[in-house]
Amino acid sequence: MKYVEEYRDTELGRNLIKRIASVSKRPARFMEFCGGHTVSIMKHGIRQLLPSNIEMLSGPGCPVCVTPVGDIDKAVFLAGKPGAIISTFGDMIRVPGSVSTLQKAKGEGADVRIVYSTQDALEIARQNPAKSVIFVGVGFETTAPTVAASVRQAFKEGLTNYYVLSLHKLTPPIIRALLTAQELDLDGIICPGHVSAVTGARPYEFIGNEYNISAVISGFEPLDILLAVEMLIRQVEEGRHMLENAYPRVVRYEGNRQALDIMNEVFEVSPSNWRGIGVVDQSGLRLRDKYGALDAEKAFDIERVDVRENPGCICGEILRGVKSPSDCRLFKNVCNPGNPVGPCMVSAEGSCSAHYLYGGENER
Ligand code: SF4
Image 1 (cartoon, rainbow, N blue to C red):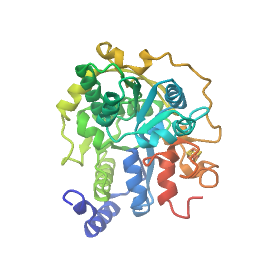
Image 2 (image 1 turned 90 degrees about the vertical axis):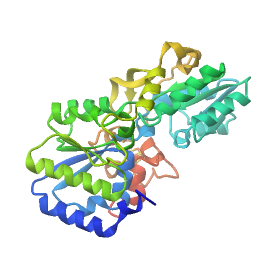
Image 3 (image 1 turned 30 degrees about the vertical axis):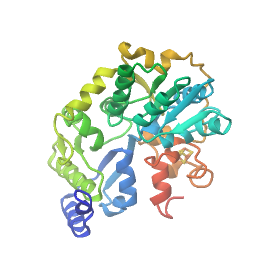
Image 4 (image 1 turned 90 degrees about the horizontal axis):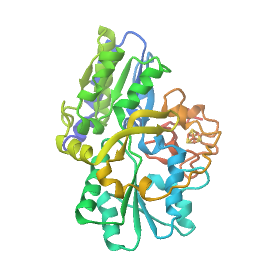
């Protein structure tokens, strides 16, 4: 498959690893932002292939994982409303809230449906005019435009039974928040690939300009990541701190204008609560007033419950990069993909899931 197989070429991979070993002289610590990067790094054993002076940390780029317990509780509450149909993407329904999950609510009679696109959710609304169809929208700048398109479409059609619970999050502000918190002594960041296809490269320039940290946008195949790591190492060795794009086949400097326009038309930037990090200014998206009638937060009187997190789960610290899954005492023995205690084990992009599936025997 073009743009996939050639980025998995073993010979090219060996050469890249040799190049990395030859240029890497000093210790460096890099964070891969995206859960998709983490999965690829773990799956292809990239950490083990890098020189021992290079440390890789995982970041908060898993949208299901960063959705806090209180927001899961909102979705579970809405599922219990008479006449409600909850539609969302697959991983969301297994994430534990304070007392329940969407999956449990479904088992108890709530109408919870997994959809593969917002168009499916819209169709459910058209076919069930007497019901309230609530799409629970999670994700970064990659998914927000498609949700925005569904809102605009529902508005245009005059659908009065389609709502969005917008839990969307923005990536540049959370990277800024992590760097400002200074919990990690990072030398470089592997910036989001698919998100950057929408945002463009420009929003990540602040990493080098303001924080003196090297940054490279990367794709998700093993050679993409190795190339990004090599570019980061070269920057560190040469004392450069700038944004480079190792994913030019997908990411342009200005991003995808059409996707950005529809996102900006429907959503406005708002504060957002991140699991393990807290409320970060300007890091979320809420519906603009024009579309307020479709905003589930406004349309329903959502009852607040006391937020209860599992005290043994350290997903929050893992998302900040300060701990790794093997630091969690529940990892593997209590928490596993069949019995996930926290979202990092639920999501296919979660660190705990990736370490469980690909970490090998060395991970407890
Ligand atoms: Fe949470 Fe399970 Fe990961 Fe531990 S292993 S941090 S309990 S998701």
